[in-house]
Structures are given as C-alpha cells and as structure tokens.
Length: 257
Length: 257
DNA sequence: CCGACAGGATCATTATTTGAACCGATAGTT
DNA sequence: AACTATCGGTTCAAATAATGATCCTGTCGG
Image (cartoon, rainbow over all chains, first blue to last red; front, side, top):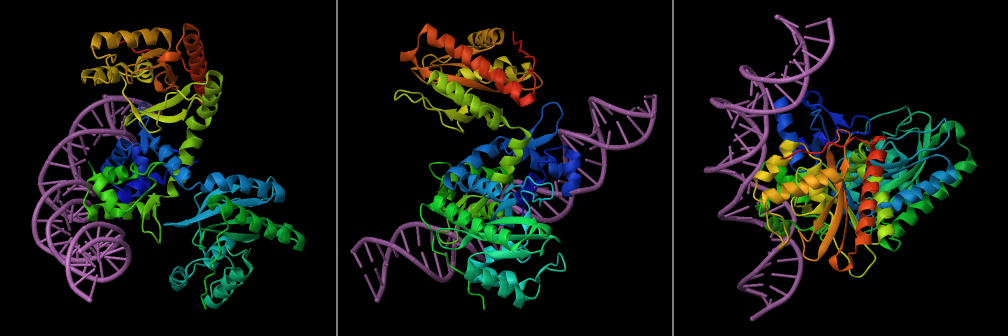
C-alpha cells in the first residue's frame, strides 16, 4: 500500500454515521501509527480534503471534495441523471431501488432510494456488491468485456447464503441468461429473504458501467410484481444511458462460454 | 510537498474545462516526472479518486469523490443549505452572488450564481479570494480570531488594482468598520470596475467560516441598489447560519487594534 | 494531586519514492 | 518503407521522504 493509498484510505473512515474522528481513534481504527496518521491527516488537510475543527481538534471531510465531486458530475453526471430516474422507479414500485457503479473497489453502491414500507430492504451507499451473489453483479458481468469476467471467475466466489451461486457452471449460466434477456434476477444470493431484479447501465462502448436494481423481501414477491419490476428496471436503465449519452448504446453482451 | 499532497494536487488539474488528462500532458503540467505522475495516478485510481478510461487511457475524476462529498454534505450541508439562499438573492438582485468558505488554501469560492445581465461580474468556483482585496475577505477577517488576522496582516499584501488596500492601517480600519456594521464593502480592490458587498457566514463558535457576497459592475451602482444589496447579503448570511445550526450564532468580532 | 489519555513534536532508522533511460505501439512525414 | 515524434507504460540504482518509539504538554475525572 503506497503512502498515497494509506492517506486516502483514511478518508473512507469518514461516513454518515461517523463523520468526525479524533487523531488517536482514527489511528487505532486504521491500524497506523499515531504519528503517521497525523502526518497523513495534515497532508490531507493542506490539500483541503479534510478539515480540522479549530476547537475540538477533531477531523472531518473538507470542502475540497465538493469542488472535485462537482467537476466529476459536470463531466459525467451519473448521479444528476440517475437519481431522478431512481426516484420515479421507487415511487412506482414502492420498493428499494439502488444504483451502483463499477470502479477500482468493485461494484459500489452510489445511491439508494428506499421503499416507504416498514418491511423493506436496506442498502448502504458505499457498500461493495459481490458480483456473483447479487442481481446487480450478474447484470454487470453479463455486459462486461470477456477478460474481466474470466479473471473474476478465476477467484473462488464467497458464500453468503445457502442460495449463493458458487459453482462456475451455474454462474456462467446465470450470466448468459442475463446477457440474453437484458436483465438479471437475484434469489437470496447475498442475503436471505431478499430477491431482486437488475439491469446494466451501458456506457458508450456498449459495456456496462454499473447497474440499477430493485430489491424486495421474498415475502412480497408475486409473478405480477416481478414482471413490473423487470419492466421498470429495464426502462430506467435505458433512460439513464440515453440521458447520459444522448443516444442508446448498443449492448455488448459478454460471451463467456 | 509530501507525496500525498503531490497526488492530491494532481486532482486539482481536473476542471470543468479540462476534465480529462493524458499521462504525459498531466506530468508536464504538474511538473512531475512521468513515472512519478503515473504512480500517483495509479494510487489515486486504486482508491477510486480517479478513473482511467479503458480505451483512451486518459484519466478522469473517479466515483469515490461522490461518496465522500456526500458524506461531507450530510454532516455539514453548507452547499445544500446555502445554494437555495444564493438563488433567492440572485433572483432578487439580478447580480452575481457568490459563496466562499475558508479552508487550507484560503478563502475559496464554493458556489456562484451569476446575474442574467450581459454586463455582469463572473467568478469561478474554486478561485481563491485574497482576504485583503475583496469584500468577502474583509467580511471574513472582521469575524475571525485575532491571531489569524494578525498573522495574515504580517504578510505584505499583494496589489491588484490602484484601489487595493495595502497599508496596514487602512486595512485594519476596513476590518473594524466591517466588524461594527456586520458587512463589508469592496471598492475595486481586486478587479477594476467591480464593487461588492459581503457578509460573513458565522459558525457555531461565532467566528466566520466563510462569506457571501454580491458583486456588480461599478457602472450600475446607486445608493439604492447598494442599500438593497447590503440588506440582502445580511439576511442571507443570517438565514444560512440559522439553517445550518438551528440557531443564530452570536458574532465574535475581531479586535485587531 | 494523580493517572490516563488526548493531540502533537522529535529524529535516527528504514522503506518508499524518484527520474533518466528504455520499451513497444501508433501516427504522421518524407 | 524508413524516419521521427509522441504516446502510455516499465525498470532499477540513487536519493529522499515516511516511519514509529519516545517524549512533551494539556485536559479531564476521580
């Protein structure tokens, strides 16, 4: 881990739930030396990525992030474009809808619109979704370049529930079905009692850059709702791609077999 | 400059106007060695702060920034709170309104609402405002801890126009007037032909954390508009503080003399 | 008054970063 | 077809920056 990566890894300890850290606390949590942690924080503070409260001496994320995030969004307005669409879908289905993007850390949840029902599926922003165990992941893989899929399949997949697909043959089957149909279905692969449908969000090159999914408790599933969700998730994904690029990218399914 | 600071400084080359960079270009611009630049970019990419386009090999800001910016905003929603207020002020005055926050780099412009008039003042987000030469800066200094003000006054101030206040005595006078009145007025101190009024945005500790300003071309100034702008900027600043903290912080003027 | 823990500073040791040179690929130019 | 100029990316000895045990100081609660 390079020094830079260490410094940035500190940023990831700041969350909605714990937006402020004291030096010693953070050092313990990150398992860095206190002096090291402090030097990294000072560097981050000099760059405006964190700020230190003058009185409490605690650290929090800095204003510099706002500018950077804004630049990113103005160049590639995924959130701006997708969030309203997610809202629509959430309103229409009243189930939890989430958007994820594939990046260095994996398939990361970027935004969640939760159902208003008491019995609902909760997903945390920032959470990394295992590709083989979630509908989002399968939808993503189904429209990814073959090398990426193959290299992912080489690693032994983690088991989360009794339903997690772990045999490569079954996984490949799921990916191919999703590639044919343009959407995927999750069957309690990540969490017991949760089912979901997902569609890829395609980039201009025709490969998936992320996915959108609707998740619901198994207890509420019926043929009718599933069908509606499939419709909703597919048209939402199309809408997002179209609004991002001004045109509909032509899909490039991965042929794994 | 630490390695971490170098890496983060690379991020600042990505702007609305130049959101993508090739390796060699960026290395030249940042005056780092190509190998160094690449290692830093790889570290940033591993952390999700930049992304590399698989085909063009060019780099752009990454999705990780969105999550971090969101955490920051949910903890301290300055933009969420202030932008609507700025919009109101801009609509009411039809002049350029801008918000700045004090951080490591200085007083940084966070958001701008521009006037709809053809002849208007333009301010760039991300721009650092010299404290002694702008209304925003004076308003900020007038409500800053005395040590900060004193250490700033020690440095010889830069001259931007014939009107820039550079004599310490005059500067102190301006700061004290602003502290008394609760707002400051800029008289072409930074740019010829531009006048502005600004008010501090107070933190819970009573010290300024930034400021809000209305800027207009000198040619449009009248006693009446100035008075309206002063009213507007003061009530906007109060509103922002109140919405941020749920109460009105009691101001702490700096006593410099 | 004391102990515990906080944030911060120091500096010899150590490990990471650095950059000139190099590679292979691509795109004009002659 | 050969030449040239770039590009992104890699290598490795030399140089520099990061590290962490230790110390300092202030604050809090008992």
